[in-house]
Length: 115
Length: 112
Figure 1 (cartoon, rainbow over the protein chains, first blue to last red):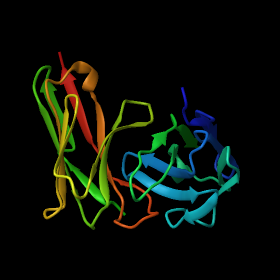
Figure 2: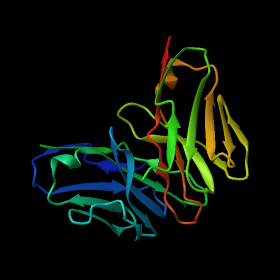
Figure 3: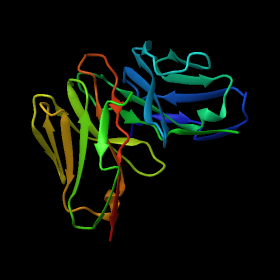
Figure 4: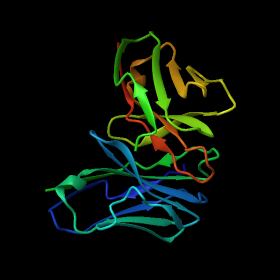
């Protein structure tokens, strides 16, 4: 049963610490997305990769956030330094295409709490 | 920025009743998708409707799309307690290679 795997599922950290979230997309998918979900803002797009190349990271605070795809089986989202306002659930999703169709498959999310 | 906006924000119904959720969006689209999210879980794709389609069915789900009004509706017929979840519409921006933008969702509660 193919699925998107995210780690960690839960992370509690203190302000100023570095946080790295990892995502293993479904094998064969060529698009990977990072979304952040909060009660106030809903689901916000942070970054988007196609064939490992970043296409859109305009929704991501560049001073502290970075997203990479070291290889086709791993996407990372890093926050350094973390702040309490970064507390949210971060979702990774993968798909075969976007914009011209194609569903996204979501992981179960990484719940981040920054104290 | 939010592309889609769902209405209502919350909906409570009894089992067996139908549930209708609406979505409005701002720009032209290639397709519109609906997703479901159970509490504490990731989103799951329900149905996709293309801009040249007006209605689509999948089991107890019926989706309509009115591109002239930039709106869509999701109808769940004969609802069950297991349908309790949040439902989101998602749209692209009408250009190939753009990401999906999600609305804030409708929280549906079905009581038995």
